[in-house]
Each structure stands twice: as structure tokens, then as C-alpha cells.
Amino acid sequence: MRAAVGLSWLLRLPRAAQLCSASCRKEPPSRLLQPWPPGCRWLHGGLMAQYGTEQRGQLHSPESRLYFKNSKGKYISPFHDIPLFAGPNEEKESPAKRMKLGGSSVILNMIVEVPRWTNAKMEIATKEPLNPIKQDVKEGKLRYVANIFPHKGYIWNYGAFPQTWEDPHHKDGDTGCYGDDDPVDVCEIGSQVRSLGEVVQVKVLGLLGLIDEGESDWKVIAIAVDDPESQNINDIDDVRKLKPGYLEATVDWFRVYKVPDGKPENRFAFNGKFKDKVFALEIIKSTHEYWKALIHKKTDGGAIKCTNVLVGTSPYCCNEDDAQAIVESTPPSEEKHSAAKEVDKWYFLGQ
Image 1 (cartoon, helix red, strand yellow):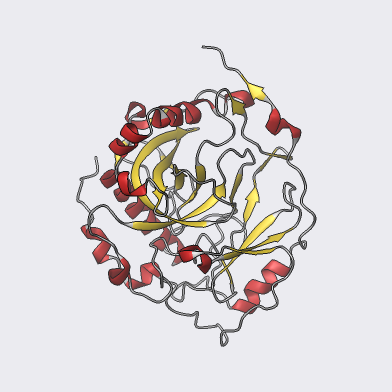
Image 2: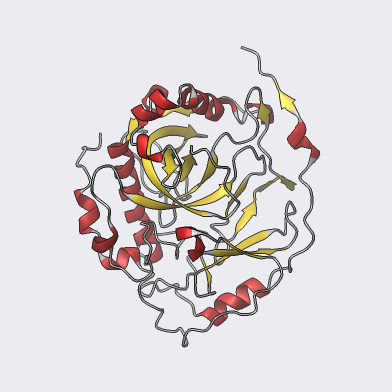
């Protein structure tokens, strides 16, 4: 079992781990990518305005890709260039200055892949340069999660923590399984329905250990810091108290969501019991370390694409012209396409 060593490790993170503070050695002088082409969306308001997105291809099609830009208008990788730890000047400040260690607040960036109540299985494309968000495809068909009564689509804002990686070469001591080769998943339980590609600042509350087809697949429970209930929800026990039934529904959702596809129910570590915030932060710490090894080519990443713009110490760092060329090589934005009719179908599972 992992020791509950608290939050002191946050202060020991090297500056290079947060990155985003130095420009790549190959990068030319900064310039804004203006004017913004059709399909661009800027996330206005507060701390969310640091990042924008650009739609390429037709939404709900195999060609759909959502690329990310930072506050300077540069194309970036959401997987590698958006820092795990959040702050108002996160591209400039050192980790020690922006770690909020008082009370219960360690503030992290979450990338929203699937807004609540929607069905399209959107995900960071870890095996494509710059890692845009795309819709998962299986056997030539776009993937949608089923509506399993009483749950409509995803029951939280679902996404991932940047700069984390569940190493498929590492066998976890608690689950006895290897990592699933993806960033760590996040279930944001606040009251607001978020947008696809939104970067949300969250605080960690706890964690569920899913065993998905034999792989460790951690599900971190978090809440947005700008949520009206955030001040009153600081750990997993607060969720049980203030949102009764939500955690039980979460376990039920993950247990059966693949059953309509003909697959067996999923299993869980710890008999489906949620672990607390300290345990969850330790998981995030270890997966952040695995990501650092990945981005610095100190481990075998397989098909993972580590192309980035802001990680100056990474051998995969490219300049902004290369990044722009990657985006422009994809189909331009097209008129929005409606989701498949299967998102309206309901499944009722027997006991």
C-alpha cells in the first residue's frame, strides 16, 4: 500500500517537471497566430481564458479534431504543454510559488473531454502529434456510451489530468495490474455542465480504482474550484454527505457501461470503495513522474506521441511553425454534424 505521506512532495517537484516556463531552444521569436481561423473558440472569463481551441474537420465524424492554443495563440499539446498544476501565471511561475498548500487546496488543471449528459466518447488522441481531442473509433464506428437507466450519458464532466501517464510497463502494487497507457481520468462533480476542451481548475477529493479489461484505470473524483459548493466539499466524505447517492451511482456507471456492447461488468480495486484525497494525490504524483520519464525519452512510450511546444528540456519539442503545419495538415472545420441517433436509445439491464 502507498504510504499516506501527505502533500510535502509538491514542494520538491523540480522546475523542469512543470515546464511551460521556458521556450523551446528551436523556437523562433514569439508571434501570435492571427487572425484566428473559423472554428476557433476562446474560453473567456477568469482563469479559463488562458486556453482556446480550434475545431478541425466535422464534429461527430472520424476526421474531427479539436486542437488547443495557449494565451499567446500558439498551438500546444493539451497532454504535454498544459501544466498539471494550475495558477494565474502558470506558464511563468515556479512550482513552489503556485502550490497552494494551505488547508485543502492543491489546484490542478483538468481537460474536459466529455461534458456531462453527453454520449460521444471523446478523448485526447495520445497517439497523434499535438494530441488533439477526437472521438474514439472502434471497428470503424464512432463510439458512444450507452444510456443505461437511469443514467443519461456521462454523469459527470469527464476528462483527464495533463502531464500524467498510467505507465503500461508499471504493475501497480494495489491493483496488481499494469497502467492503461493514458492520462489519469477525472470525474468533475460540480453543478455546471462544462464545454468540450475546456480547461477547468479543480481540487481533488478522492479516487476510485477501476480495473478495465485487466488494466489499472484510476478515476479521480474532483470538483471545480469555481463551483458554488466547492468551499464545502474538500474530501470524499463530504461528497457522501452533500451529494448522497452520487458515489454509488459512479460505481454503478463504471461497472456496467460496457455491458450493452456485449462485454462483462468491470471490476474494481478495494472492493469498489473510494480512497481519500491523500491517496489520490499520491497516484497523481506517481503518474506525473511516469509522464516526466515519457516526455524526456527515459522510458519506452510505444506509439505515444510526445510532440510539444513548451517543454524546453524534451527531445520531442518542436517550434511553433512545425506545430502550425501539423494542424494545417488536417481537414478544415466544417458545419457541425449531429450525433448518431443511438444516443437517444435507453438500455434497461436485468439483475
